[in-house]
Length: 235
Ligand code: ATP
Image 1 (cartoon, rainbow, N blue to C red):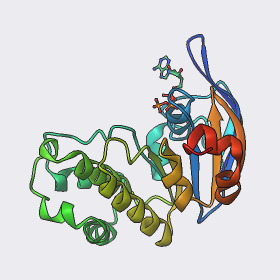
Image 2 (cartoon, protein in one colour):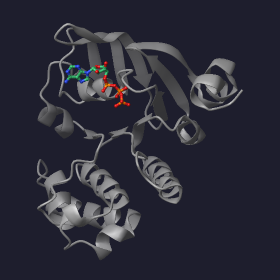
Image 3 (cartoon, rainbow, N blue to C red):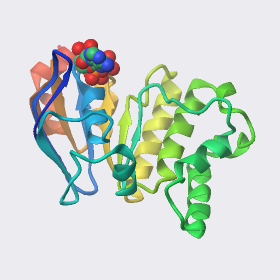
């Protein structure tokens, strides 16, 4: 579904992604694990068209997207929930969700997706008239995910959805990610919480200072000594 072939991304002189290749098959949950500053957010931003790779290619469902602007990529069926949520705080929950659908014209489909999002996140339904800036961190995460779903993506990129959330809420968010996947959306999940990420992912890639250093099934990575000691707090 998504193929990344040997991309390099720079911030001025900083070489942030060094020959990264990665593949996601339809229906999978794939997780990208790495320490602070490894390049995880940079990779997601490059896939969604916010950053341009200097070379290499990204294809989504067989079409090249490496030169496209972010809006065209969303329209093609790929949505990104950025790190730190970034909801529009002066707008209500409902207005934020509406914005997620702004590229769509199918009114009936949009109505159905409102229903789906409210089913997935009942908390958002209770608070649909509330200003988003007054939501809790977990609720803002739900809203950011709901807003991305309003574009009806076939591939969803999630950047550290568990960041800063209480353990119980982290569990809820991960359960919802699994539900979104089961209803037909492929997922690329960036996480520092490697234990949780591997527990729901089919496969994983490990990134260190801009390079993919390891990949495999979640089971393989769970059993790897290198991963256990570096990312899973194991021995
Ligand atoms: P974190 O988990 O801390 O968000 P990350 O793996 O997502 O880390 P990135 O944010 O992708 O890492 O950063 C990768 C590298 O690129 C880091 O060395 C970072 O300092 C650098 N970098 C990121 N954004 C910029 C920028 N706008 N300008 C210059 N350097 C940047």
